Image (cartoon, rainbow, N blue to C red; front, top):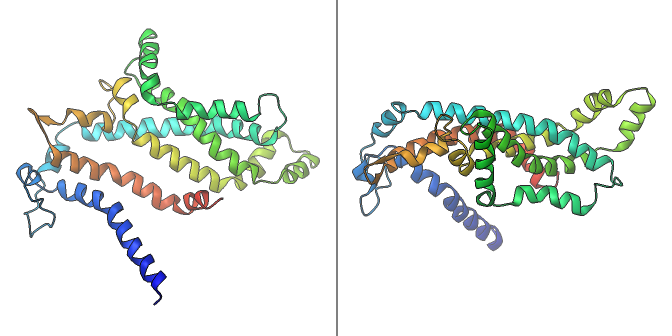
Length: 272
């Protein structure tokens, strides 16, 4: 075994520990009682350093957390679907009409800027906007806000995949008499399958974990699991074991998404 291969394996082990370590700590924290959480030195090995308990999970299922998970699922999924529908046609326009007046580099940069703006810079105006219309702390307000901030990312991702589809395929379909929507449905969408899957996965993951808008635009009647976390205090003491249990449960949907769409996401990062 060569030196480079040994160094590569060592690097992968260190990187794996760096990535998996925090998740491992989160998982085992959910099985500790509150006293074990604050022990020094930390207790890291179940059945050796501490006796696992389901105390935190019992508390989780006796609170609103299941409702908050369902809310997060509804909001993230709805916003992803709406953003994807809008972004499909926007990305098609950017890809196919490169000489259009509104399709220069500056205009596309303005589109991306909406995604790059720090949420703290716009959360107050958005809060005032929804309050003015009487939609504060409602599903439409949160879903629409998520949708608006997801569209630039979805357009940017889909445009790259759309550019890889030869226009000659559509030209041939046009000669055969297919109208736009027929061409789009029969030829563009099937060839865009991997791009759609990767875009859905990434947009949904970002929305599932979003915190600031969920806390400030909703957080009362409409409560996502991220907005519920600050409420987990016992007096002045944060219930880290309950947070660990929630973090473990909240990681299950993203893990499933990543497993199902892993090859499409890898294709995205490997240059499509």
